[in-house]
Amino acid sequence: MSRKALKAQSLRPLLEAVRSDAARMVAPVEEAGKRLFREVETVEAITFDEGNTVWSFKEFLFPRAETLFRYRLKNTGIELEEPALPEGETVIFGARPCDAASVALLDAVFAPGGRKMPDGRVEPDDPFYPRRRAQTTIIGVSCAEPGPACFCTAVGLSPTGTLGSDVLLTRVGEEYLVEASTEKGERFLEQYAQFLTETEATKSEVTAAAEAKIRRTDPVRIDLDAPLPELFKSARLEEMARACLGCGACAFICPTCHCFDIADEGNAVSGSRCKFWDSCGQACFTMHTSGHNPRPNQPSRYRNRLLHKLRYIPERFGVHGCVGCGRCALTCPVNMDIYEVARAVEDERETRL
Ligand code: SF4
Ligand code: SF4
Image 1: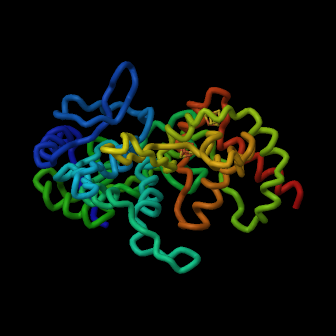
Image 2: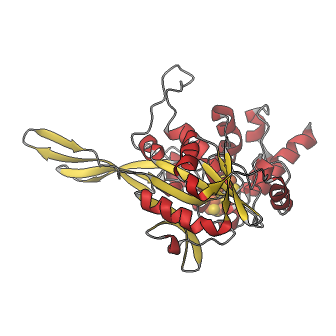
Image 3: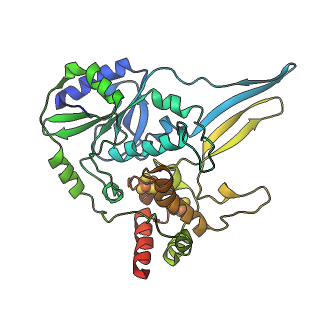
């Protein structure tokens, strides 16, 4: 991993150069009083304030709605047309380390790269995600002011962590420490070398100061060795999950959630097959055509969400299922908080042991 320094006043000129070289740039902007990731035409549109965005940049890798193919019935048969993806490089600037870390999971799910399933079959890549991902550079910015709901350190991450960022900028005094953690990041340092200088600076003090501001620090995890039947019978989980309304807001705001639905829109002559974000917390998600629903009530659906994030994903992919951004706790209309629920479930287990 290479590291350089960037003078604070050189950040905008650097981003202007990046903006003009890339086909598109995505960055935080202020819109209707909210901080959101949007495609920006100019660097002036970017907001550099501390704090995280309302939602992550996930939709630029895994769109909320996406056409998989269009079909048209012709005299000669059915004609299928695959939509073209935008050409050229996308630069995502301003990703906080929690959001950047979520990409490790999206990669594992949508670009398994030949990984084998337990039955020996090879998991297929998503037809579009790997291409979007290959033409995306992520410039992360360390988080100096974690919010009240943040708990990235409780899931083993850090407000200055490099996981998922090709390049990470950390403000150290009047400079930014610029760390490259991927080959793409190394190429970035070479391409924009005229803005950068050598440095011996470290971010250890900045890291310690930022981590000290995180208020929710107890480890959030579900023991990978805990027997699943025991977790399924957790009285604390059942009791807390009864409050869940199944609205799906926590899933739609989450940087790591990746459930989707596929629907055909059109008629017998023409139309399209589309993929949409979905949520396992909603009652119809597992509903069978017969009417049978294997997760028949809200506690069973919330339990799936919790265990999926903290048990099944780490077990299956070895990556973080929850990056501790705290957005779901801030968004839930009935104050369900994955940090509190996971802590309660683990406390209940430890009491029993
Ligand atoms: S936990 Fe909260 S936000 Fe998530 S589905 Fe339940 S009520 Fe909605
Ligand atoms: S589950 Fe909640 S805290 Fe964890 S990554 Fe998703 S939105 Fe953030």
